[in-house]
Image 1: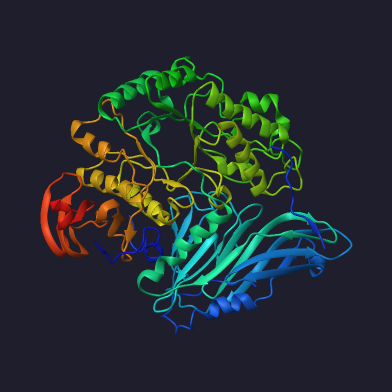
Image 2: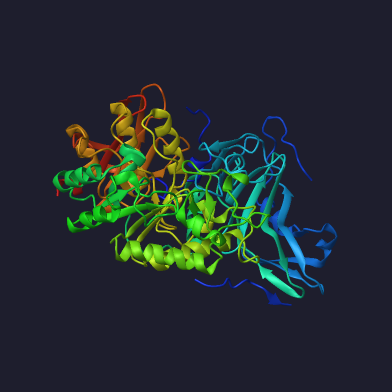
Length: 636
């Protein structure tokens, strides 16, 4: 069966149209010899220049180094080594003295695009994305980099990280993105008139007569209509994976998580009751994930806290294993509470302030959501690397855990502090810590990044949380749904996306079905978030149906996120039909020839249809998941 839809990774037009109406060891440092613009008011669309001129202008732009001492900038030379549409930049210090480098401006050009040009950009950390238009950028999610995490943003610009995609009406779409993230943070700044690309060198010193390799950059354009529109993001994921290959974890996991029904007050009985429910009713849910609450303080992960009535959490984890399920644990490895034993006994392990003392994170960014303000373990310190390795090896070998939900790991690259290794960048500090964690956890364990830096995590994690925590209300379902679908192009190529847990209680019937359909459409991990021991029987079939994630993200054929297709084996396609609005609607799909259609949730046979099908009267805040099979296949 041939269905005229984009491939699952080809989501760019959808991503750009949303939010218009919303409710061990030392670092091998790479050293080798050798105008502010204010936003203009929204205006009528201006005449489009051929977008091919934007890549051409970028290639013609002379890159510049910004030195900490402006008088020293002329001693630095930046070279862009282009190979097709990808560049490998370097910065060279030809002088006889070291130079402190603030940042590298790879390009800064006028883009000559209309104000209504749609845009999409990633955040530095998981909770931030940007959509909207270049004249009116809109935050996706509630915790932007520039405010919640206090990251700098140039006046008159919106800053995004890793990737910037632009979709001008009637002209080819454009993408600029970094294909590596091994040492430096790369960002894009967009205003109504200009676009610029920078690499943050953090004031580090480049020695005399030496050079640094910087992060590689791709600049591409694509078609303005049809299947070429999504080619750019799909190709980007493939290019990134060549340098930072996806880990070998074979499929997105399924299980149950304690946080969304019990929070930090979870007890042993809560966990074991849900384990019993899984044994009785949910044979395909494999993992039992114990979330925050078992530890006495952030940082003291191997000590017994009050959350289980004084019973060590490892006893419960071992019981989970003995009963045929896989134990999973929540850990925030980079942070420690002010009263933690690890901070008290090892103050030298922590990122320091200018006073030489451990620095609380709230001095420079968000200080943490509980038991804070958090202090940050410095992974450039060899003893911290050894600590991480030992911690996770203990959890794997003695606690029998092979699924680790790592939260708050963005703190591992906190800016504004001083590292043990003064030559290390924030990205290097973070990656050293994550590499030590992987050595302890082992290559076969599943590591989920949560509240993590997106680009710096490339190649280091098996799963990537793709949205804020789910809440039991329509606004949360709406917001997290868009966060998740924006990142659908990453699923299966960079890592397995994690759309957060499936919740079916506390929502209306329509909203619960909408949320379940959306979780299915992500193609990523599925952890149930309700108390399975008390889940109403009418909710059980959907949990069972989602217990085997497909690994395939839905493909959308328009800008509304209304109809997405999941192409399965043997010519079977499932269509997710969403109604994001407050009024009933209908949704149509087109396919080739005669096909049998059924409701994938209820099994209801919706008949044989020739060339297409329309689902009428989809209620507000509701969704349908239909399965379409060529009639000849269905007959067999």
